[in-house]
Length: 508
Image (tube, rainbow, N blue to C red; front, side, top):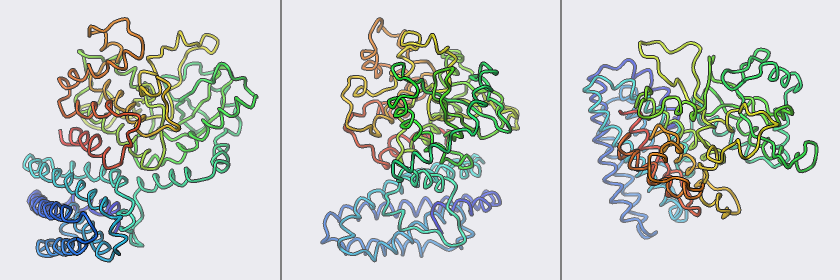
């Protein structure tokens, strides 16, 4: 059974188990995780060379013994959590004890990664024990499994290859969507461009006319034929003339990103909007991405607009919603990075908050139903003829860019650290629940140029800590402290960003 697929089979058990059964399960899991983690600490300390390969095998057998002795219930009875631990440990160790000396040399990092994930699991189950006493366990276990399907994408490739799905278990929607994206990115440039051409509407003039007739498409989705579309855009460079080779080169580069976002599966519930069409809208001098919302949507607004309208100190958006928003955005970025995709345009204007046509059942209607990271910024209503660098403030985009990019010290290629830095600035605004510019006005910093403001962003961190806590402040600080030569690893991002945000969002 695939570790990613186990959760779906366990949902039924969770929903039907009694509180006592769940409590016994969680206690057993917490005990075994602690024991396994303790053994792994000793084991990794002894395994700094190939001479200690025997210690590795001995440790593996000890873990198997621990699991055999402690497992008194069937896998079906154990359900959710223990099935995860048992299957993960067994499949990993079975393969692990068969590795050659050469393979062992390459596998030390895998063990370190396993230790970190066991740490996360152990902490989660200790918290679950407390939640069970509050009668809140079932839903939280399901929430935890949902996030686990994403985090498993960050496991080392060697470990992921060790765990295979049985014939009767399909990969999770998250895994399949991630794999589709990886497959696209592995294509040759010519094949990627061929896929991008498919996104051109059959009748682009008809769609352009529908946009023109509607006028304002920034507030509500556009009904086009039998579809509902939300538009993100990139302004065509003013020094590029449509039809010229230079213009076509720019369009080709951007169309690749559109095709990548077309690989997404909305059913996977990753907070990324799928691109349906991509074309040049001449009247607005814009390259448009037509995206499909995941449900019937009444209205939408950028995160920047939502914060502006509900800004600190008169906040109506709950703490829970803000923390969940932060976690889901980090999860979306992590999903892209594990597939090999760099976003390059993460700002609070490229995050769109959707208002459902039919709100969720219950007494409390959330202020923000869901927020999604788009391929680019939500379309603007600035007329093409009046658009220039003066009425499009640099704040709106460049404040989110890494200092290397602003100072012209860009590396030969864009790297993950730049995306994570941009995410950090968005998380800073979410933590403050103020636009950066407004928050800066409350400081002694005035009349500074853009670079000085960017350098001063860390001065806002204490405010974040006072509003969302020290843990959240640490996450934002880690993102903002990234240097241009930092290689952000999957396990590092989970440990420093995704894991802490999940703790705050799911377990608050």
